[in-house]
Structures are given as C-alpha cells and as structure tokens.
Amino acid sequence: MQLAAGTYRIGPESGSLLVKTYREGMAARVGHDLVFEVTRWEAVLELAGDSASSTIELSADPHSLRVRDALRGLKPLTDSDRGEIAKNIDSKVLQGRPIAFSSTTVRPADDDDALAVEGELTLAGTTRPVAMRLDIRGGGHVTGTIPLTQSTWGIKPYRGLMGALKVRDELEIVFDSTLGGVGPG
Image (tube, rainbow, N blue to C red; front, side):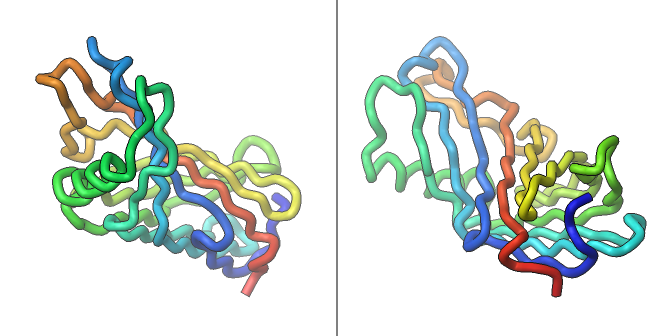
C-alpha cells in the first residue's frame, strides 16, 4: 500500500462524495439520471502499521445533498427543479437523519494498491453492513464505489407520473479524494 501509517482527515476540500441514481420505467426518457454531491462531509482514516488496527469513519450532513448533474433527460433541469429535488431528498427520503459509516475491518486487498473495507453504514435511520474496495493510486489518490439498494435501508425509491417514472432501487455512492496534501497526522 502506498499510504503511510497515520491519521488522515478528508472532506469536500480534498475530494468528492457523490450519489448516482438511475431512472427506469415507461417514462424513463422524460426523467434524468441524477448525480448528487454531498457538500458537507468528513472522513477520518486511521492507518496503523498492522491493518487489524486501521479504521475508517465517515459522517455526512443529510441536508447537504445537491444535484450536481442531470443526465439524459428530455429537457434540462431548472434551478427550481434542482431545489425541489434537494428538498424532497432531505424531507422525504433521508428525513434529516444522520449519514455515517464506521469500519469493522480494513485490510490490504488482493494487491498492494487497494484496501478491502467492511463496516456499517447508517442511512435514513437504518444501519446495515456494506463492503467496498478503495483503490489507492500515486500521490494518495483514493477512489471507491459502493453499490446500494435503497430498499435495504427502508428507503422507497421515488416514483413520479403515476409510477411511469421511477428511480431505480439500486444506486451508487462514489468516493474520490486525494490524501497526499493532507498527510499523516
């Protein structure tokens, strides 16, 4: 692994935390695949000499999700549309409940350029286990994707136009950050 042992604190100033949703249904052409950016979050990576003592903690403000991109829709989203979507995510989906991840296992993956991470994700008031792979590239660039099924966390995927437009139950959480400028502490 290319990262030195130490404590790394990261957030929006050094990376991005995105949620990617996808549409389906008979009216899918009308809607958009949405990319949300979590604008307020913090992660702490405690990397120890032995991987058994390493931990990763993340907290995110559920009120900070903003539409970053709206892809493949028939017409562009207006600022009003974006505001309404953010309001619905906050009030109807996440209901202002904390978003948090706490690792239970952090170990080198099959190769030296990745970590295999397992832990508990709390989302919309429900905590469930998740597993992910964090790829590590030169300069402390760390990336990873967590595929999620919303209904596993008790979230009912959005439906519009009398059910003809749906947000797919499966979504992705995408993490991309550089630890090099932060350094061990």
